[in-house]
Length: 401
Ligand code: MN
Ligand code: MN
Image (cartoon, rainbow, N blue to C red):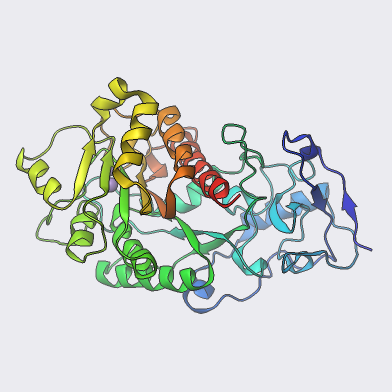
């Protein structure tokens, strides 16, 4: 008999068959099912510090022997961490925080299962630790790990959206891609190939960067599936410049390259939250020529959140939408840990409200980029980025529900 424990999350306003799975026999916490291709080498292995966390977690919640639980094609007993998880209608969710404290256990996004531990997934979280395309402060290569570490406090139910994003859909962490820090062209190829491979197995991917260079190969992979996409680009910057120091592939140029490669629907793209000084007024005309409409940060106050939501929805309509969130769209007060901060940005409350509204859009992919933890304090930026991911996942869940 499978052992199923009642769970505090049964208090959810939406009655669901919440159950916390007590897992099958203890195995080596470091063991992990193999992943194909690039992901096998890319998945992080958790060395001494993290295994220490695991040892702590097992003190709190040593799994009881028993046969594996089954549900929705997933065999819970195959989990590499053997920790009690919140499972709902077969979706394998987070490590149960009522049994294992949030500061323990594996640092996957929101303490969700690894992709290698579920038979199928609706959404994969993919890390791209790459920042060789930056023009100012480096450090976004540490973004994926920082966002994951900052996501430990995310809970199963999102009251603002009235949805449990890890219950309505199976979300899993695919680990990091192994990208070359010394060769941008090769790195771009690796990201494109990794994203294409992943999209053959999982319909939606949420990528954690990494600098904004990675949006180009991610858009190549997404548009190969969906055709040219409407990009809703949250950023202080346009990122449609041509070259920088003669280089075509940088974190300030991905959307111009994407336009040139016909990855975008130029009748439906939009920048949100741009601000700050430009090189020249011609930057704006050049930007309009590649298909972007601008909703600058200065308009956010006049339009309000509702006006921003309506403006975006009117621009993209029912087209396939790719959302790219450069965390510097937030004011440095809300996101100090980034490479090119600009004063006068959005609040995290504004950004999250707008993202939640994307439940009404045909969201086909998203990224969160430019989180640079060396400039972060008290995880301010990491927590904001984790919540950006949570509300994007909630929007996907609402669309699916
Ligand atoms: Mn930016
Ligand atoms: Mn950017």
